[in-house]
Structure formats: C-alpha cells, structure tokens
Length: 503
Image (tube, rainbow, N blue to C red):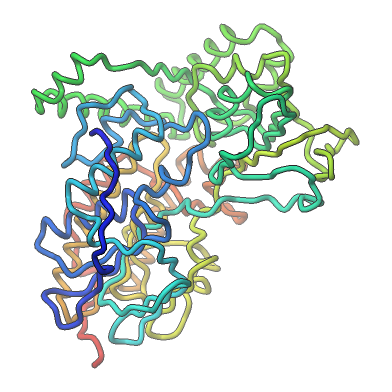
C-alpha cells in the first residue's frame, strides 16, 4: 500500500454522542489494536466511537520507533490485518517505515481519520456505576459506555536509573525516542542493552561512529534473519491473485506455529534444530573463540526472546566495536564507569533497554465503580480474564492485555481475535448494560494459564522481562495461536455477569 499524506481539514474534532445511535465507545490509541477495533466496529454497524490518540498520527509502535534499522521480526504478509492484505510488501521482513505507511494507508482506506481525536493524552478512566469518564492531560474529559484500551503491553520505554545518569554531558536517549537531530558520525557511542532493538541498530551505526561500546548484560540466541526482497513481478502477482497471497500468508502462519514447540520444557526436534542453527550461524560468522564465548547464551533457548539478524554478528566484530560484559556501576559526566573500575568515554548514550510491561497503570488511573484502582488490584499479580477484562471493571477492555503476548507468531492475529470477542461482549451487554467477568471464572482462567506456563521454558527464571520479580509470567500466552483463536471464537457468557447500568 503506497503512502500519501493525510489531507488536512478544518473539520471539528470527533465527539461521542450521548443519545446517539448505538453505545458510546472510547478507543485509546491508534496503533494496530485501536485501528483494528475501530475498523471492525464500523464493519459491524457501530458508528458512535472515537479513537483518542496522544500523537498527531496513527501508527503506535511503528510511529514511535524510528531508530536506524527498525524492522519487524514477523514476516510482513503475516504482520498485517487479514482483511487488508498488502501485496506490495518490499521484503520478507519489511522495515518499520513501510509498516507505518501500511497503517496510514489502512486508516485512509477505512476512513478512520475523521473518527480520531489527535493530541489527547489519557490520564484517568473512572466509572461511576453508570458510565466511564475519560480524563485527558490536554483537553476536556469525555463520557463513554465502553472503553477499549489499545495501548498494548509495551508502551513506556524502560529507562534504567543508573547512578549519575543525569550528570552525563552529552545526549542520552532511548531507541524508542530516537534523536534524529543527533549526528553520530565520528562520535564515541555507548549502546546500553543488547537485545531486540540493539541487534537492529548496532549494524546501522557501527560503520559511521568513531567507536561503539555495546554493554551486554546477557547474550542472546541470534538466528539468521534470511530476509529477501520481493521482486516487482511477484508483488504484482500477489495483487492480481488474492488467493495466492492468502495461501502465502497461511504458509507463514503454519511455519511460525510449528516453531512454538521450541518453548516447551521438554526436549524436541524444533528446540534441537534452533540450537544447531544458532551454533552454525555463530561459528560461520565469528572466528574468535573468546568473542564467540561472549555471544553464547547460558540459558535455555526461548527463555528470552529469540532474535534474528544477518548482520549483527559481523557488526560487533568491527575494529571500532567492543562488547562490554562488565556491569555498569555509574554514568559519569564523560561516559560509563563499569564495575571493574574502568571509565569508558562516550559522547552519546543510547538506551536499548526495552519497555515496562503493562506500564498503562503508571501513567493512567483506572478506577472501577467501587472506587478501587486497577493498580491496587494488580499488586498481587497482573491478570486479565481471557486476556481482555478484569473483574470489577465493567465495559473496560484491554487489547493485547495480560498473557496475550507471543514469542513465535504475529500479535496482529491475537488482536483480531480479541476485537471480535470484545464486540460479542458488547452486543451481549447492549447500550444500557454493564458486563464484566465473574471473579471465580477469572480466577479459574488465570490458574489454568499459570499452570500451563510452568511447562514452558519461560519458567526458567533467566531474567526475561516476561516474568515479574516473583516469578509470575503475566505477558505471554502459554499455547500456540491456533489454540487461542479456538478459545476466543465466541464467549462463554456463563463466565460473565451482565446488569443494567445505574441511572
């Protein structure tokens, strides 16, 4: 889908119409989740909705992450809406800018722009027993019958609180807040973190900087990316033969599902194949045995996110690149001091330190009719019934909520399943009703999810962000996507209570 600019208009910002046709639905965020919700609502005949977006454009993750080399690690034909295929993907794994263009094209195709209120940062969501009030940092509050959070689980950058970080004399920024105005050419750069974003950004900047120190806490399982360009004739064929494009998408879905076996605790063919592929990739690209040892994980494959790259291992072997495995003691005015007492000079510090899982509660207050805050309830463990709702918070839905993350396939598939499930719940409650999961049903579902997670490699306590300090995994789904799609095909309404809203 080719991109063109969103036309500027003088139209008034969209509003939720009390007394209008259908329930008022406030959607938070204009990323894949929020857009997917809005598109399906429109297809199902719901028109009284508004997307509230903090920025000035759609795109979510793919609008915010513009660091050099940013790309998706799921094949593009699968990392897209099933109802809006794009036959013109340029590569097997398309760059971030191309995904952002796709999302803007979808917003135009489905006429979403008139239904988006840009520049609206949510600060609080409170229910009074009748309706939700959504408060913003920038603008008047609104009332709604339903609130759908499309903010996802990875929203706020994780900024480590290193001693002295405020004293550093040069620029410090997170990969998700990339400073395009900072020219790295000829600079001494410290990249802190060596996981997903670092694997992408380091090869892009290593050739232009004077020196690069890569601070690695733990090595990663890095597999060959094997990305390739789609020739124009094949792109044209996908456009002319939609069934071929659908079959190609299906092929990748099946291939990615097959990989899920690597996350089982037990030994199996897939896990063994991943280890062999990693070892071969490392041996072919890294000749120095000491460096190879630095880059070899000592934890089970899959316990942390498996990364893919064709050029990362070559980049870290450049003469101007050092992998630093000593821990960071402090940030100084001139660079980084490691725990071995060495001061390493830097002009710029790049934080490739990931995100805070489900930080929604750090910046947004979510209070139910009882007055209790979701932040308080989640202190004992973050959980959501069927990954989309919490007891005590009627008509509040979370897309890509707790335990709906994946390590092997496309989260867009999860979003679409959740969107359809949420619409079924809305239809059940109707315009004047309140629906929420029964506490016993939510507890039973969470117990089942947590039991299944114990049979996965993520229970290995390897320090992955998937797991909290108590060892509870509140991020990932313990089964394959096929199982999730089957479970989310239609709600079991016996798990929910429905009542009339107070008036």
